[in-house]
Amino acid sequence: MRCLATKRSRVISAVLLLTTFIGCGGAMAPTFPSAKVGGMVTLDGTPIAEGTLQFIPGEGSKGQTASGQIRDGKYSAENVPTGKLKVLPNAVKKTGKVLTGYSQPEEEVINIIPAKYQVGIDVEVTADNPSLNFELKSDE
Image (cartoon, rainbow, N blue to C red; front, side, top):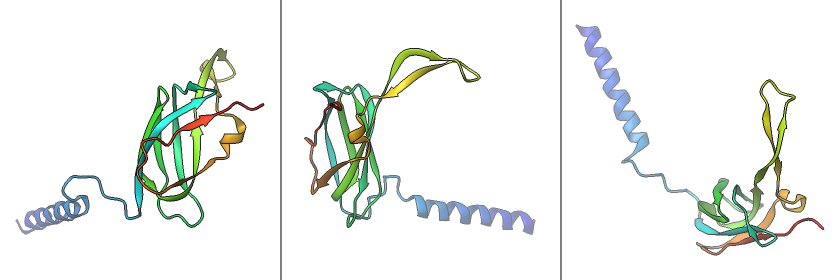
């Protein structure tokens, strides 16, 4: 009987400890200054159909990397650290070719982001900005 009571108290303790770490359910607020940003991402004036943007803190900026999904040229990202950042865009498209050198045939995809942007775009975020647009141009 004592063994059952000990197990039960351990389970209750574990649940209480877990509840303490989880909190009341909401997302944890960032511990660094952050902002919500959004806008358009285009390539040669055409909205990028699908992709991502990563916001990486630069030297002297505090915070964690944040990301936002691009859908039909629009994106939004929360908890973007304020300060100087590198923004890494990523977007691919299918070429229509099928690659057969693997165990299963796969559709070929290519990165549509021009090389000059693949190393990152320098931006500075100081506050929420619903119009932080990225107008990318093809390599010339």
